[in-house]
Image (cartoon, rainbow, N blue to C red; front, side):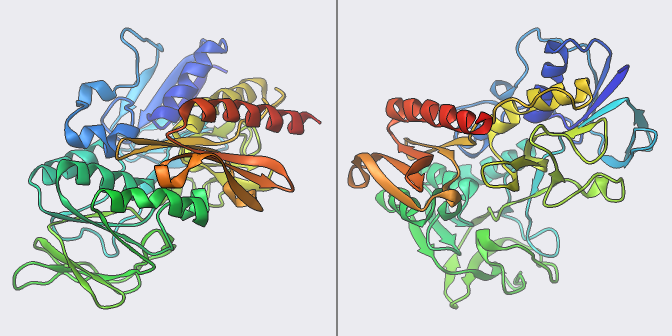
Length: 418
């Protein structure tokens, strides 16, 4: 290959670019990013960055002096892929022709129906999002967080520690019920009450009300993290004043954070021939339906042999580790044997407590606490299917969790090669 284009300049795109060089590719490398920023670390955006403990310069993912000998095209959004001539069209009219393409365009935060909401309403996905939220949180006041995923849980935790009055609205039975399962998620969610956060579960959001004479009201039916589709008219302008719940309660708010999930950034691939299904549909090595095109990171739905499904996993570790396999497949024309799969892993820091998880809770038919106690806010739980571990949760049990994580990875790799 003479030219490889990496479309996406976040962690997954950077990891793919590093893997290309590490695996011996010495041709032209073009990295295209929709944002104007060089690659930066996202996990601190919902935590230390909001409090000011981490500055923007500390978010940089590139090492000092690191040089990938790449052409960086930043602030340029990809709008189309011509698979025949292997050309990526950009919004400014330019095109990048390449022999190989790595799709790493990530995912975008779901936003409120109708476009821009009133002032004081935020999503949190990018550095620019975090800048705006940080400035609002610094003013203090009443914060309402909508949505029971990681973004919502971490922002609620951070804001509570900063001294804001926080209400956390979740459509499901408890925050993080999806990734952790309802029982263990309930055990973790008590951290919010411990720190004075009002947790309102099992209710959606009917709308937002603005301050003053011009109320801003969203369409009804916004169901927090469980929302799969939203539509309707635009919210009005002015500053947000309250969140109205499905049951009619009105929760006063000076700031609102909407954390109702993310959507894979794949619109630009419509009609290209690249198969899409909740992200770019990939094999177990990141290969797509088009030869010479692979996909990595949050936009990629890799085949998971353990569950016999395609899964889009939005975790830092996957975005960092999986590009190596995709690049090997790209450079070999798909002949490189896929590396043994590693179970998905994530962590979350809330109220000074480290929550770690590895595996897939949805595959489990039982879960047991095997060390510590939820009552002490420090425990380790193992999820099993037919008696075999499929996932592990650690809450402030880092050392033991690390050992169990290694054991699970070994077990999964053995199963994949059996």
